[in-house]
Image 1: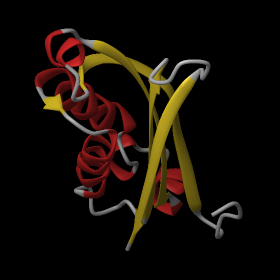
Image 2: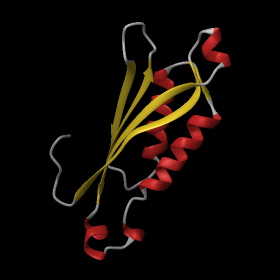
Image 3: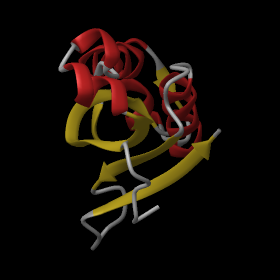
Image 4: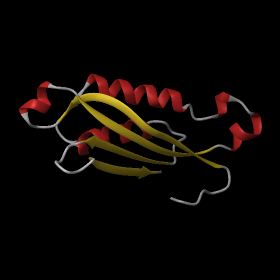
Length: 123
Protein backbone atom coordinates (compact mmCIF):
# COMPACT_ATOMS: atom_id res chain seq x y z
CA UNK A 1 0.00 0.00 0.00
CA UNK A 2 2.72 2.46 -0.90
CA UNK A 3 0.65 4.69 -3.21
CA UNK A 4 -2.37 6.51 -1.90
CA UNK A 5 -5.53 7.05 -3.86
CA UNK A 6 -6.54 10.72 -4.13
CA UNK A 7 -8.28 11.89 -0.97
CA UNK A 8 -6.92 9.05 1.17
CA UNK A 9 -4.94 9.91 4.28
CA UNK A 10 -2.28 7.69 5.80
CA UNK A 11 -1.94 7.98 9.57
CA UNK A 12 1.17 6.51 11.16
CA UNK A 13 1.61 6.05 14.87
CA UNK A 14 5.30 5.30 15.33
CA UNK A 15 7.11 3.61 18.18
CA UNK A 16 4.35 3.58 20.79
CA UNK A 17 6.24 2.02 23.71
CA UNK A 18 4.06 0.25 26.25
CA UNK A 19 4.50 -2.36 28.97
CA UNK A 20 2.47 -5.54 29.26
CA UNK A 21 2.63 -9.20 30.16
CA UNK A 22 3.71 -10.99 26.98
CA UNK A 23 5.14 -14.47 26.65
CA UNK A 24 4.96 -18.04 27.82
CA UNK A 25 8.03 -18.39 30.07
CA UNK A 26 7.56 -18.04 33.82
CA UNK A 27 9.62 -14.84 33.91
CA UNK A 28 7.46 -13.35 31.13
CA UNK A 29 4.24 -14.29 32.92
CA UNK A 30 5.18 -12.52 36.15
CA UNK A 31 7.07 -9.49 34.79
CA UNK A 32 5.83 -6.83 32.41
CA UNK A 33 7.93 -6.23 29.31
CA UNK A 34 8.25 -3.47 26.76
CA UNK A 35 6.47 -3.76 23.45
CA UNK A 36 6.83 -1.30 20.59
CA UNK A 37 3.75 -0.71 18.45
CA UNK A 38 3.51 0.85 14.99
CA UNK A 39 0.17 1.52 13.32
CA UNK A 40 -0.55 2.47 9.73
CA UNK A 41 -4.14 3.47 8.98
CA UNK A 42 -5.68 4.59 5.69
CA UNK A 43 -9.02 6.39 5.55
CA UNK A 44 -10.88 8.68 3.13
CA UNK A 45 -10.07 12.21 4.27
CA UNK A 46 -11.78 14.35 1.61
CA UNK A 47 -14.30 15.85 4.04
CA UNK A 48 -11.68 16.52 6.71
CA UNK A 49 -9.46 18.27 4.17
CA UNK A 50 -12.33 20.26 2.66
CA UNK A 51 -13.97 21.34 5.92
CA UNK A 52 -10.96 21.51 8.25
CA UNK A 53 -13.24 19.95 10.87
CA UNK A 54 -12.22 17.31 13.42
CA UNK A 55 -15.69 15.77 13.21
CA UNK A 56 -14.85 14.67 9.64
CA UNK A 57 -11.43 13.25 10.51
CA UNK A 58 -10.47 9.88 11.92
CA UNK A 59 -9.43 10.62 15.49
CA UNK A 60 -6.06 8.92 15.89
CA UNK A 61 -5.89 10.01 19.52
CA UNK A 62 -9.02 7.98 20.33
CA UNK A 63 -7.60 4.94 18.55
CA UNK A 64 -4.23 5.26 20.28
CA UNK A 65 -5.85 5.60 23.72
CA UNK A 66 -7.84 2.41 23.09
CA UNK A 67 -4.65 0.60 22.04
CA UNK A 68 -2.86 1.76 25.21
CA UNK A 69 -5.69 0.62 27.46
CA UNK A 70 -5.98 -2.76 25.75
CA UNK A 71 -2.25 -3.49 25.95
CA UNK A 72 -1.84 -2.35 29.54
CA UNK A 73 -4.94 -4.11 30.91
CA UNK A 74 -4.42 -7.56 29.38
CA UNK A 75 -2.01 -10.47 29.24
CA UNK A 76 -0.83 -12.17 26.07
CA UNK A 77 0.96 -15.45 25.47
CA UNK A 78 1.80 -14.73 21.83
CA UNK A 79 2.77 -11.68 19.80
CA UNK A 80 0.42 -12.94 17.10
CA UNK A 81 -2.56 -12.71 19.46
CA UNK A 82 -1.66 -9.24 20.69
CA UNK A 83 -1.15 -7.99 17.13
CA UNK A 84 -4.49 -9.42 15.93
CA UNK A 85 -6.39 -7.93 18.86
CA UNK A 86 -4.92 -4.49 18.14
CA UNK A 87 -5.74 -4.83 14.44
CA UNK A 88 -9.33 -5.75 15.34
CA UNK A 89 -9.51 -2.71 17.61
CA UNK A 90 -8.39 -0.37 14.82
CA UNK A 91 -10.74 -1.96 12.27
CA UNK A 92 -13.75 -1.32 14.54
CA UNK A 93 -13.70 2.22 13.17
CA UNK A 94 -15.81 2.11 10.01
CA UNK A 95 -13.84 4.89 8.30
CA UNK A 96 -10.70 2.74 8.28
CA UNK A 97 -10.14 1.24 4.82
CA UNK A 98 -6.77 -0.40 5.54
CA UNK A 99 -4.76 -0.94 8.70
CA UNK A 100 -1.43 -2.50 9.46
CA UNK A 101 -0.21 -3.24 12.97
CA UNK A 102 3.35 -4.19 13.87
CA UNK A 103 4.28 -5.22 17.40
CA UNK A 104 7.94 -5.52 18.36
CA UNK A 105 9.16 -7.37 21.43
CA UNK A 106 12.62 -5.94 22.15
CA UNK A 107 15.35 -8.41 23.11
CA UNK A 108 13.08 -11.44 22.66
CA UNK A 109 16.01 -13.32 21.13
CA UNK A 110 19.63 -13.33 22.11
CA UNK A 111 21.71 -11.34 19.59
CA UNK A 112 18.61 -9.72 18.08
CA UNK A 113 17.35 -6.18 18.71
CA UNK A 114 13.75 -7.40 18.61
CA UNK A 115 11.22 -9.78 17.13
CA UNK A 116 8.10 -8.39 15.49
CA UNK A 117 4.80 -9.57 14.05
CA UNK A 118 2.89 -7.57 11.42
CA UNK A 119 -0.73 -8.16 10.44
CA UNK A 120 -2.96 -6.16 8.07
CA UNK A 121 -6.62 -5.91 7.14
CA UNK A 122 -8.69 -3.96 4.63
CA UNK A 123 -12.28 -3.38 3.67
